[in-house]
Length: 214
Image (cartoon, rainbow, N blue to C red):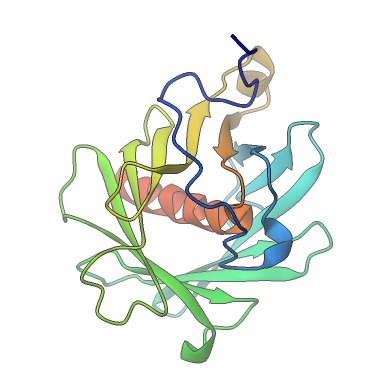
């Protein structure tokens, strides 16, 4: 028998690699032919700037997230390490279906829409979100789905309505994270999946669940 894959998460069964070629949603530069482990570090005390950062497993900065409140819209922007905007996430504050819209760069123009994310049900005991790419006009079937427990930081990202896993998260609690007032958890993104896309989904997960806590 061969050695186990050190990247393979321990809390869910491995999924077959359904994407044998890169599947870019935000950009091909974020698709690689091997698993990517990223660390999400959320600062509890941060309110308006630098809500959380995304590092690689060596703690090198990959992305950072900034938040603004504009009129009746809450806006979060995912930036690269050099402050270039990658995507902008918006949500109407008055929204029955908790729908979020993700646009390319710092745009909020409909022509730059990449995908939308919404709750499958208004009231949920467990997190279930449906993801629809901009090209999915009918939205009869979602392109991706997120299920799990945000409280436990244990969520799995699926391809559509299938059981094929494209990414999953688990929480990492250390003495240092408690001392520094940070919430740290890791996400494994499977080969050829756009990891910037997964980061944008985590931004939405964070916002939805923190809104629910308010």
